[in-house]
Amino acid sequence: MDGRAVSNASDSSNTQGVPLLDLKRQLGPLRAEIAAALARVCDSAAFCLGPEVQELERNLAAYCQVKHAIGCASGSDALLLALMALDLGPGDEVILPSFTFFATASAVTRLGARPVFADIDPVTFNVDPGEIERLIGPATRAILPVHLFGQCADMDAILRIARDAHVPVIEDAAQAIGAEYDGHRAGSMGEVGCLSFYPTKNLGGAGDGGMLTTNDDRLAEKLRLLRVHGMHPRYYHKMVGINSRLDSFQAAVLNVKFPYLDQWTALREANARRYSEMFVAAGLERTVGLPAVGPWRRHVWNQYVIRVPDGRRDALRQFLAEAHIGSEVYYPLGLHAQECFRYLGYDEGDLPETDLAAKEVLALPIFPELTADEQSLVVRRIAEFFQRASRGHRLAGPKYLKHPLARQNLRRPQP
Image (cartoon, rainbow, N blue to C red; front, side, top):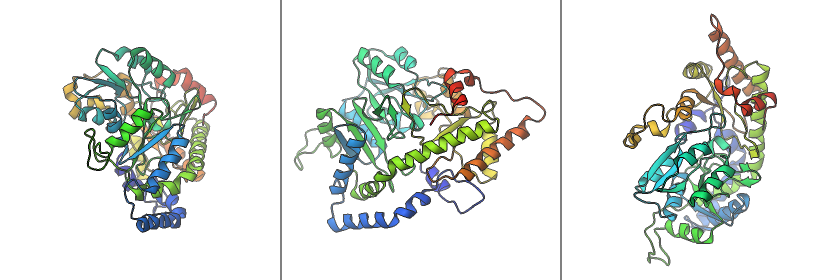
């Protein structure tokens, strides 16, 4: 997610509206703690990979249920470093979803490898394992599932496919810290997991930052070398790496915020339940597609994304904007349709579920400090939009509501 989400949505000065995200509400109570932590960094003068970074790495390794956590400069760099550690290069193919943030695919292409885009499951928005299995070929060197919006992909199926094909799995868990699949934390199931600490994330810093997670001792050592130009000892280079060190200021901020992560996640879960209940109470469950939680999964709700069918998404977003209610489209194009990837030769209709989701998805405010009154305002405004739109003709509900998982979530809203 890009910086626009932070700069546009953090201003809650208009009390009649609802911001997409208000970082000030979270940071305000922590201001003194953060200032003290930053002062300690200044006093230590250990600005890169210092004690604050080491503390964060220890905390995150335990939290993500892995042996090793390796800090780096951003979530994008985490993806790049993971691919570098697995020696990906020209001629290699990596299977990944097209419905994701750009960094997932750009890391592949920066190494000269070829992204192979897979379609998504229309209910969870995560990559469809059947598509992965169909796309596996002799040049496949890795599978890169994305735990989108805070919910793990179907990792049992994906790991089975990977084992059968003898290829590693890299988890893009940038939006999913703390998410679980059958009790396993995001970032602990593949060979390497990749986290982001961009400010919009559930655990967000005051700028860019990232983390790699792994249980593989050899990979951990290689990742630690790659993030510092492949250098050890100083000025002796065993391999060609990059400069991607997590700075101590970011780690200090994250160490202050980390103890609150589970509390904030619980608030996100409560907000998601409340939204679903409000949508059902308003009679909107057959008009918009509500988010669904897959079996054996803990969703951490980095985003609460509805689907708006019948070509009405952009009109609804404008209607909300007029009421000063924030929303965002993650994402308006599948990566296979981006101009920079035209050389890959994808045609319209190759990834139909991705194309349809790009036309329908709309993210609503879900941050931990969001109030029930604000959520009620959001749902009332959406109900008003559809009441106006329905005058004169009947609105068709989205076809994916026929999916058993979607029907289950309408009967009993999931956390």
